[in-house]
Image (cartoon, rainbow, N blue to C red; front, side):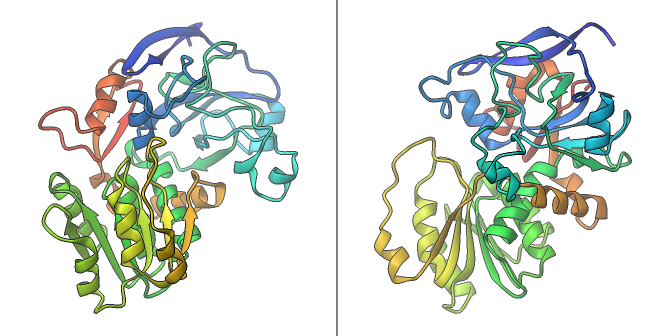
Length: 366
């Protein structure tokens, strides 16, 4: 391998440039991952636009927090700790926890206050530099969390471990979807579609998905993954339609997954049944939202904030991928080379005419 490796660096809003960095030196406790594919999610889009990087966070960084790859090098102690060897395929989690604080020890590592940073968000201001998935290689910190995957699944499907993990966590672990439940998914993006898959996998009775007119193709895909009903919000009122579908019982679980938009939050509170659960996962870019909290109280609604994906969800998502039960290849629509990161993000954002993107991945080797 060459002494220098490529990475796409974001230097400002809508500013990405391809740079070269020295190959990290691997010791006994760390490793190096050769990137096969790295998915792009909605938060990458908003970060690219500058919406999610507030004061004091204007540093240059390598985006990409959904890396999948092959272990290129690994230290002896790291190999024993992670249970991997060179040649193994692994999915890499975003967070790098300390593994020793109280939160980590009781399984709440996502709340670790001593975290070593995170993949796709850490600055490129010191060695080993390679902290993002939009690169040829990514550095494996001694405290990184890896999950092994089979090598015989296409990289474009295998890399869906992150959005599918989000669907599993939000619909099942946080939403508490049970056998026969009615689940309303607000937003038909890749994580909305993943939530459909997760809900159906645990036996949801009725799954309803909403989207805009421009999301017509995604709504059709939602039905292929098991959605029982879809709602075009440009033509129909969400609450009225859910009321009609459920004969007035409303939804047991509502997942609000839309970026920036405020109306879906109001729809979520109105479309959920008394005593139901609402999971909020759609980032709004820090914008204040007009929410009537009396509705939460009077309907005894449990509202849960969804922060990321944890190990349990990743493990279960990987099992779903490896099962081959769902036609996940239909979700993947675009693959881009490392030199085309900006266009890839803009494609997922819907900014490229005539391109209808669902799942987009960066594959360094094309």
